[in-house]
Length: 208
Picture 1: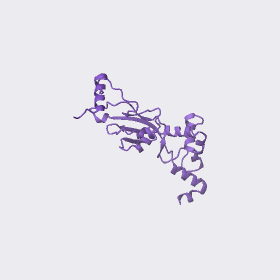
Picture 2: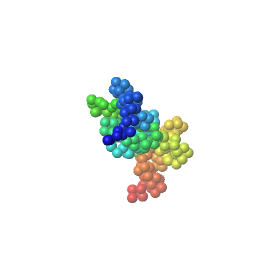
Picture 3: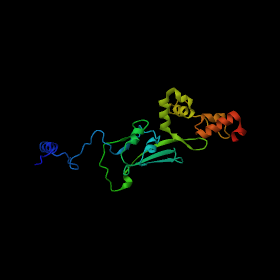
Picture 4: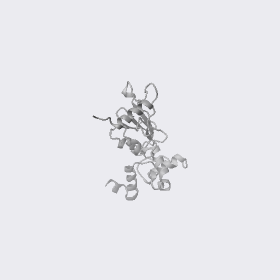
């Protein structure tokens, strides 16, 4: 004679007394567990546009587009949650720890997949000499605040922080050729190297 398993008997009695384990969704709202990983969401106030989330995403669901011709130049991050695997790497790698988070939202069904996306836009800082992207303005502000006095060792951070605090007026625009005064402009690493070589060794050695 086979006896019923005690565990199954216990579960059956519990279901009779407390009711079914399943919820009545969609007729009644379902409340997910505390660590449920649902729809990712950007938080514009805390996102600095550093693109760390896009770099670590294993499913490559975050598109990053830099529009340097816009006034002002802008960076757009678009997350397509219809192909997201909800792994949480974006949230874990966010440098501010609050720029992107997985919410408790789980009902993500849509008729149009083009609507299955969340976006955030950030203003860019571009090199004043060659026009290449240096980084998002909020990213440089964040780094300057994080480093504190150490930011004085990095000219782009120093200039960005001074502009945010409105401590100094913007320096006048300096035309070519490159000379020492260009050090106090927002330059990409390549152009800053050229300025330093020009200032130390002269144009001839810089070209060599």
